[in-house]
Length: 228
Image (tube, rainbow, N blue to C red; front, top):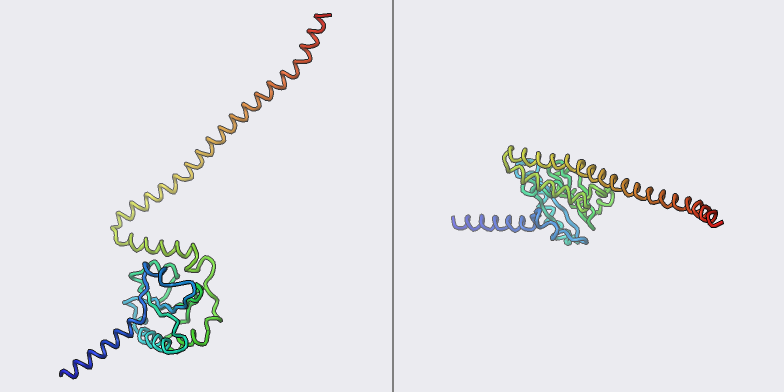
């Protein structure tokens, strides 16, 4: 019986060590973990996803094989989309599981697979070169991608509040959004009125100057006639 307990303990320890090699990436540690020159494989999963559970041992096997190959520098991570909605939104994850490859901050998605060899060859055979990376607005490292990630985190936090609280917050945002054009339009009208007043004052000054210059010769001629 003791021998069986020892075997089970060793097996459990091996499983824990294998899983520990896959880095758990979160909304909080993502920026610190993913460097500009790093190469990563990241699996987006959920605990309730049956396909994710079937892929998990294959993904772990791929990590072990990569760690023993010439591509041991490739880091392997995983993101739980339920607890990290910011990253799920930032990477525009629309299906589970989703595996992405990151190199030089260029992100490429792997085709859906249930085989560890497909995951490994994507890296070792550099099949990622044949896949167009996400660029522009949809890149997780772009300003828009970061904003989308922040929005995903906010939506997750707001979902914990009651519907009435959400209605109040949304109403406040709506009132603020509606009041902005009114504020800008009133400010614009005030500026236009001030400009019109300044223009009117300038016109009056110009007219006075012109009238003065026009009358000056007449006054001189009258004075000269009086002297004569």
